[in-house]
Image (cartoon, one colour):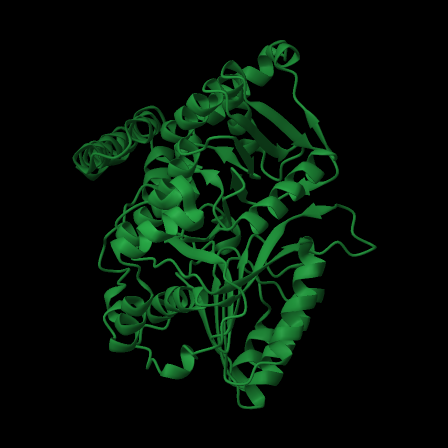
Length: 485
């Protein structure tokens, strides 16, 4: 019997593989997810034995609404419920705001308030920070001034030149009595054992998000925390695309120019930002946070800029960021200016952009000329024909790598955050965006977009059609994998 098994071990393994594959396919069909994504997994499972199973079990597990990501412990605490209730706008208040400055974008506010319990905050100061060198100058200054607590949650933290400067400062603040909580993604971040020891010995509470065994070999492992936020004393907040790494700072000796965008916030929006941090902290620390009123100080209103904080991930019932972007595109009357390093959209976003452009709206997309991901670049290229067919203008940034994730619509709506325009950001990763309803901020972001176009080259649809067939083959293959990227 043993000899028979040994002589036929390959056939036995194949049978086991396809039994597991059938089980996986059945699970996929019952989950009733996006048909394109389902088909992609089925193709991989059927035509790539063993490898297909590995891909499915690494990337195909669905944890949205699962109990492992529990928001209720934080959202149900009395202080949080009271704060959210005080910020939430009534229907009559929203109707008044529509007449005041929100125009037809009021439905975006209602969407987030209903699906994400994200209240519209009206008392905020918003500063747009261009590139890492500007962001870190302001951030270090604010960190030095911290008196009560520092909360940091990042996808990438490295203890290189800028990272060490930030981490050493956190140690100093913790030793001085400031409560410092640091959450990093285990796949995206890389901190030496020496620095980790220093953080803990200094009193910094430090946790990795969903640790993996071999982070260097799991760069696309599912359900990563892609957020980049800082809250200082419950009064100052940072949110955007810039991670804590030298790659994001344009030092004089840097070989590559990195163009990115971040926000510095003061005001009521920090309440929502703080709550989102605490939800994640409750998960990574596996303990209930003792929330005090010191986390939510009552500060005087400096500027009246309306902001909502949109968060999405496996812990939310809806794909909140994708929905608000879709709704913003479909509500546009004049223009849509979109910047993203990775453009691998779902059919809803593609259709919304096409319809907007065909309706006479000025739709422009700015993407990198050189990507940091071979598969993402070719997957992006696979979608460009559908944009050109609808008259959408596509620009490739030439000066360096553009990593900004921004959208501005009609001088009224803008969003800056961590979400890329791709399947992973919309459906898998933990993401967070600031949604701003303000003409001054929108016009500033519009001016930045037009300035970036000076360093970009508009693509020629006629020339693009004539690209080599080898490129089209690469694009087709990568597009097939797009739902898995």
